[in-house]
Structures are given as structure tokens and as C-alpha cells.
Length: 104
Image (cartoon, rainbow, N blue to C red; front, top):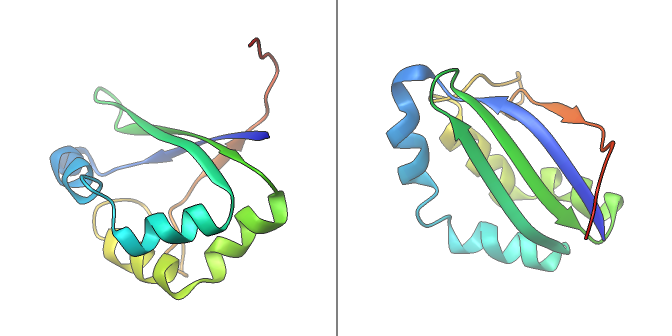
């Protein structure tokens, strides 16, 4: 399993809305995650800075990257762009992190 982590951000006045939109996540998006080998996906919020920390385990980098090309992912990004900083393609601005330590 490949462990991935990233930082993102939510607009300071949209913390509750961000959580609301994920509770629950769309069934269609959950299905895409399942079909693309995504496991243990969590997102954490630092309320003081509005930073988001995302952690996910994936079976394959290629399958993970393919999610961005699905219609439901593109629709999700468009749905979320009004509450978080986004790129021109509506994907959230994010910064990947490099794993430096792990213990089971």
C-alpha cells in the first residue's frame, strides 16, 4: 500500500460548510475511490490556520492519478471551488508531503 499525504486549505469562514459537504461524501465519488484502490482516506482541519491535512492509502499511483480524469471528480472539484483555494481546473491547490517516518 502506498501512503500519501498533502496540505490544502479551506476558506476561514467555510469550515462548517467544508465538513457538511463531506458528511457524507457523494456515493458516486466513494464508488470511484473504491474502484481506483483508495483506502483509509482522512482529512483533518487545523481550525486556527484553516489548513487541511489529507492522508490516504492507495494501491497504485497510476490509479490514484486517474481519479482526476473522472467526471465525478471534476464535478466534485467544481462543487468545492467556492470554499477553498483552487487551481484553474478547479482542483484544490495542494502540496504533497514526503513521508520521512512510518511505524506499524
